Length: 411
Image 1 (cartoon, rainbow, N blue to C red):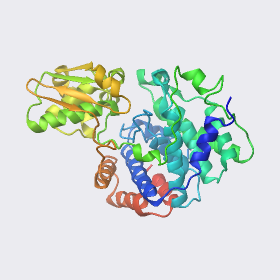
Image 2: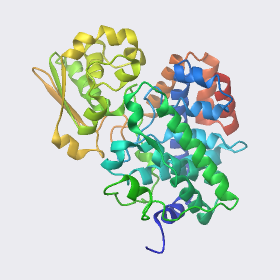
Image 3: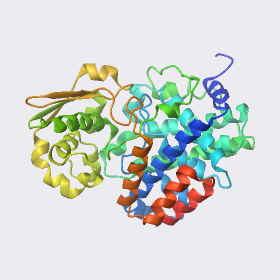
Image 4: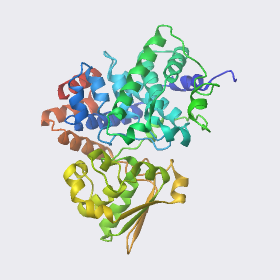
């Protein structure tokens, strides 16, 4: 084996200073996550959490991905925010600057490792959880002031236990949310125990019985760039699986031209079909994972809202869904996962999308992120005062514990 393991290289990489502009970017991701949590506070997962004795940050961890509006990194095919923010907020007594720096490092670890996983891994494993364990450990280690040796052990401990399986996609359960909490709790525990001397395997990724050997066929190289990879993360404008967003985007362009008419064919990448080829959704969760429903929403109503994925809309749009055919386009699959694309073909027109709204190539503006958060606060029925306080804490606040208090108040 080489002298330096992959986690040792990553640990050194994570010890770099975080600059002011990246802290500003982190504030937008914090606000985005807070909006996702607030918007889910009246759902069934939130009801379960109200029966728990979990702290506010862990209750929030269970809610950050419920609405399918959490931030996403394309190449790693995962959602960093739902894991990293509750992990850093769970460490009380930290200033906002330290928390933002820790979050940037947590995103970096999550994405850097997640981007090494191959299709065989993603076929069974929930990338957000598998890589999120490393990210949570890195973020909390940052708050604890860990050096490279301790951080390497924290990453090794976190990586020595598994993420979650995709079986939960096939059953009406809450395991996807529980996976997030598992990554938050286990990664934080790894960091805390490493800080007091617990050691972890250095070669946990590439070792003979490590993560890659167990879960991948052909892992990709670990890429450590000069910048911070939080800048590569996409914001999701619509409350559906990201795999459905390119079709939504292309359909909206046809609707704007007045040419979105039935029947419609959607060509997209193979994973979009694996996750979102669902012509007969019966629940809001299934509707969020249905390209047919998403395109039907655009055709009949325009830009999707969260209400468009509720039971009444599912029933009302059955006929429109029946006119939407979904199939793979190998050329689009070849560009994936670096680009999530789709082509929507109507009778007289077609539209192709390579990068969808919210991706770094077509970024959601600061005002767009704020507008999204306001809409999510409204969906969650926050008072005007609660919504404004959330915005102020995320965008201008200096007190990380104030965010925790806000979460405790709304949850």
